[in-house]
Length: 163
Image (tube, rainbow, N blue to C red; front, side, top):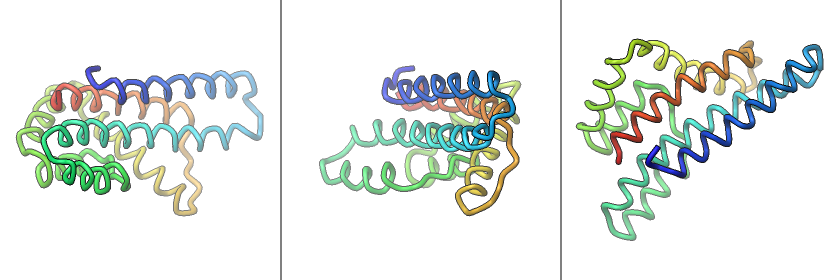
């Protein structure tokens, strides 16, 4: 990836998921597995969210004044961001550059696994929100890891688009 900060975040999360997976496989009946799975959910979602924000913020902050960078830092980096594909496209069109949205859409649509990517982003978003608002999501660690890996494909495309 060109954006080393986003790449570092993704690699760190992959490392944490490997450690969690190893523990769960070694201790399949351990009571902590449920907590580790929910931690993995928060970590995977947060990594995708922050990577998207970093990719967008890095490019936009190079274009403007110190005041604009400060505003972007406050409005993009320091606020929650909906990682669903439809929201990412709306955000790019409304606040960034519609050509980025069109490029993203073309590149995602060209992928055989395009529905998996969209679905994985939505699943991470919805499941994380369910947990964050007091729910008890029934997602497995394996599903979280798959959704994370699918979502990384969108991050890699955004990395190319925002270079």
